[in-house]
Picture 1 (cartoon, rainbow, N blue to C red):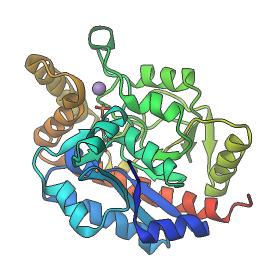
Picture 2 (cartoon, rainbow, N blue to C red):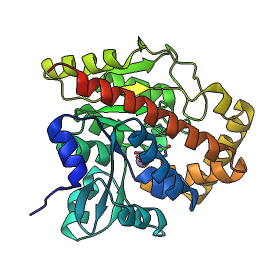
Picture 3 (cartoon, protein in one colour):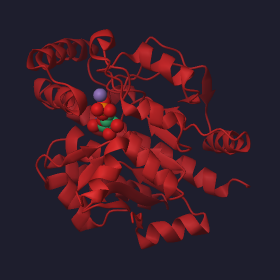
Length: 304
Ligand code: PSU
Ligand code: MN
């Protein structure tokens, strides 16, 4: 029988209502290159601990959905070449077969919520890919967030996607969307997009109240908090647009499909920008983790 393996400190914090933030592992295994990925993974946990928040990095380890990786498990996920990328539909198969793999926004959200964790930080959500009409490529992140009660702090959706179409899907799926101190939807590598966010929040306590009220209404959807990367850390817009064209062309030429598409696009970005997009991606995630920490602290202080 499948059992979640929850690290002792995570279990203790959840039971006591202390702040916990979940972190995903696909970002580590497939979004960032070695050896920076492991450094970043450790750094994100330190950022949380420094704020009095317990980190819970999530992955599948030898068939066990594990909430709160230890240092050895984290190293394994970061360093194993071609470690599996597990979305929600892969979880029961990987667990049944005793496999190890990294979890996406979708599968991390699901496992975190199951473990009683209410706040999760990532880089950028998956969504509707450009050229959807031909590929029908839409990340399972969206449909999973529609049915998983967790607050996800992100820098919007990855700018490799069709951002407008992704926003329409989030609306259809009934996923509340908050702009963190902005009314402009952020663009992952870029601080802004051409799209507006209907609801701006300026305080972590307000996000906690939204979370509580979503529960009171019986909503099952996640709450998405869109937090722009600081302008000083964003990628140059022209470089971004040029490399994006190039990356999309290369992906099409290779005929990439399914879960290989996003890691390929991100890796191409990191290479073609000579590491500039990597620095931005790291700034994005660090920035989201600090906001998630504030929200988790506010949530744990929120009267229930
Ligand atoms: N954010 C990042 N880098 C990443 C991801 C998010 O900064 O690599 C990952 C997340 O795990 C997300 C996944 O769920 O990309 C989306 O993949 P796909 O498009 O195949 O669903
Ligand atoms: Mn896809």
